[in-house]
Length: 232
Image: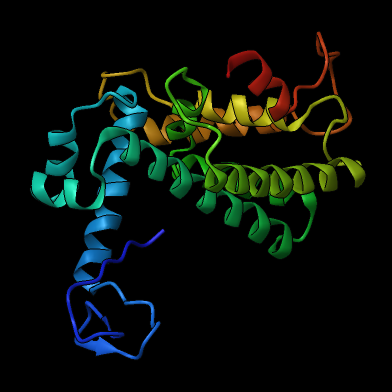
């Protein structure tokens, strides 16, 4: 999701912002400080969106990122662009956690636990703007990232259910809604040690996913497609 730009140079040359002109057709490499600033903005915005929603003040996001407002707007010209890229950033990182957890953990339930706690640390609640009316959910980048996330989490959950370690009456939508709600602090509260409580509550939730199930859930398992149809 890195950004790049070109400046005037000799005909046919592309300027590498890291230092000098490159060969014709070469994609310019962003400067290291630009990459760091972009990452700081995305991380700060992710935190603010979880705490205060996607209408969080942009100047406060810049302050938390340790950069000036002008730097924020150079990377993200308006709020919609920032929200778009925060959502992509979170989805991409959560997808990697799902894939790595299943590949590296000894059993599917351990993989599910690792993924759930890692996704909470990535502030998965920052994806909530996807469910709002003003969010452009039809962008090709978002379709690709969402499909990758759904596939990775579905594979993880299916592995747990197929091994008999995870109850069979839940779907990806159930997991993602619970994860988002349990890891999201009350808006504007600045709750101390929120992460510690979130991980405790997530583990209680995960224990409830173990098979054999000790109760019968009302309704049907939810998919992410169900969530989109009902909210978008």
